[in-house]
Length: 614
Image 1 (cartoon, helix red, strand yellow):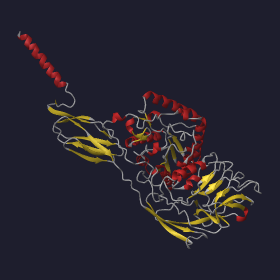
Image 2 (cartoon, helix red, strand yellow):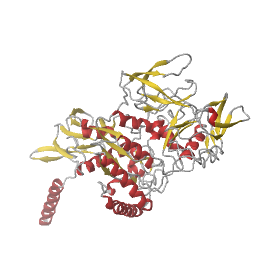
Image 3 (cartoon, one colour):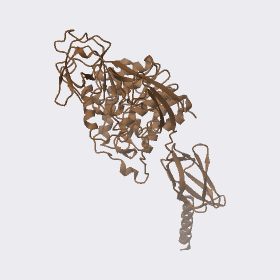
Image 4 (cartoon, one colour):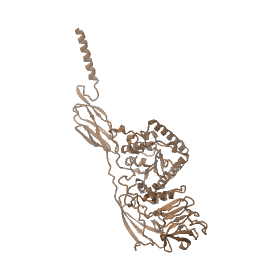
């Protein structure tokens, strides 16, 4: 009987020994005669610990290095007695003092809200009226404080007159051989510097060459023409026999003695409000100058598409203070202001406005490049935006294009244009004169849409802007915080839209046009890198997303291969969980933008486009 009890005691002792050896993580145990305890650092998206789990002798301190993710800062931890010291640019040495109990430590971190500092620039512009007069003056000097915009908007010249002439704009040289600046458009002036602008005047064609009728409101409509029609600038008078000319009638070029107006450029005065159907049927204009007080142009006013549209401001702006798309002019201003440097240019739609951390990219590439974010709106004609960018691109620049995977304008399969393009250029109408519009018949229709929607907004000032929501690079900076608590529950669609890869939007013609733009950039000495916009993989079941993504990638590569272009990225790296999005399935939140930037910079480095600073 006793033998049985001895066996049971030995078994019990053995079990106790096993339990001692197999101690669960987090419990204290003896090691070499010393008691140790386990410490675990809870996983976080915001930092990487040098060790996530460790054992420390009871009563000793434990120091762990936290490598903070770019943009995030240490706030606190839930261990009772600790110190935190900065090490280098991104390191935190977290020391837990007198560790006597097993501990599971949660560290709190947050996005460091970088102050949106804008250097207050000042400059002066002297306006030389070059023979004109304004309230008895022959010129004036204006001081500008450039808080919202780094390039000042010029005076629109309303009230500046010269008998027999239309004010066409400003010029940096008295003889008109310098840079032309449209009325109200922007000019480069160094901080603290000054520039003199000279009025550009266009002489009216002789009044006797025009046939007109007096309208009910006491103004005139020109109804016919009897002159030669071959002047370099076909300038319609603002007044004939004392009547303000407010309309160009549809009959204007019917049965004209010269047969056809061969002038290359048409100038409409700021008095004209309406251009009738067929008004310029017999003409050869490729350029037009007009004012934003023009209200109506019939679809059939011109027999073909004009190439270049110069818009002068006669009215105050309406969108500078309230519409994100108006910030486009400021993005271009950065391209212009940093032209002496090599530039790293991000171009897409709002997936870049919301989806890249340009300050992070700037820190990564150092002073070798100036980072410029040109992503504003992917629904606005992409060809129009691309041609403006190409106007300013140069040797050594890098153009990173990530067209939205469900944006026909970005994928060049649609060239629809509406009033939003004018909103983008309202702060600098000269931008609208850059693209070649000879392939589009929608320009005046888009302009009239702009005129219509503008009526719904209050006038503002050029001094207004969107600087509170955008930084100097062009990033949208309104806080879009990432919360770790409950992150898995946010892996759903953010907008309810069926946003997904759309391979059907990839067309042979569209990719040929896109490749043509890439070739133009390369001809100017730039490097083109094609990547992918972010897509919410949680917006619908995984299989449809992955199947559509694979099909999109395959078709994109096949269509661009004949031109020698291919993405530098793996499309799968840009399918993000819903937790990384903000208010739609293509707008990333703050952390999402940082993660996307990490991946994009790594792709650019792997492609040999950039060398990242260590």
